[in-house]
Length: 241
Ligand code: NAD
Image (cartoon, rainbow, N blue to C red; front, side):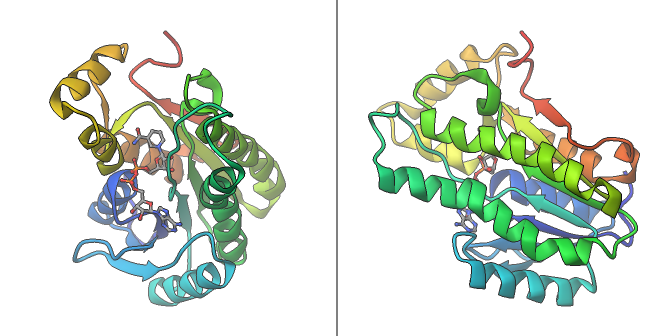
């Protein structure tokens, strides 16, 4: 995959899947800006924003586009998790996770679309999750946000097809990122929990951030020029087996 001349914004690009994506696109020739609460590691370029705040998103997208000299690819990846049933999470937590995972994606897309319309190779790739369709226990709130992301992906693909903008999503299974590391670190025996988590995957291992990044890069690339509205599972067989 070749990204020379391609200008990309990756949200949540300071960690995990977003960071792996920013690194891969950069290695393959793209110019990348990471939109995140935190700065990405050097030498990646970053713009600071909280996707829950429209003014901060608009300013960050404007700053990133100025730095990049335009925009061809948006990777909408910033997201947070939540565990529990509908009885476990209160309204404030429901609102907060929707603010980040769904409304954040809408805000970033809204600010980016006018720039993407001017591109010859425009693509949006949203990071969804296997949780959108898998019916996972103890993930009611998180799954609801990702179900919304998958529907949003399809609707945006329809709306922006004639603008020449493809919109797709990746649906990772359990991916070995700092987020999962934090969940494991909160248990009594993180190493035993990690082994148990891996054993529950059909493939016997977690997906790597780099494997998800490769799928995102493919969907963002001209190689996927006839693909829009699609959800690509990157889950070691979890959805299909
Ligand atoms: P991560 O915690 O390693 O990285 C998430 C990044 O998003 C962080 O850099 C964080 O600062 C940023 N972020 C969070 N809230 C933000 C906000 N309000 N504004 C701006 N940036 C914000 O997590 P990850 O595992 O790499 O997750 C990335 C995406 O992948 C998320 O959308 C997540 O739902 C999705 N996902 C992860 C897994 C997994 O198992 N790790 C599985 C399926 C889907």
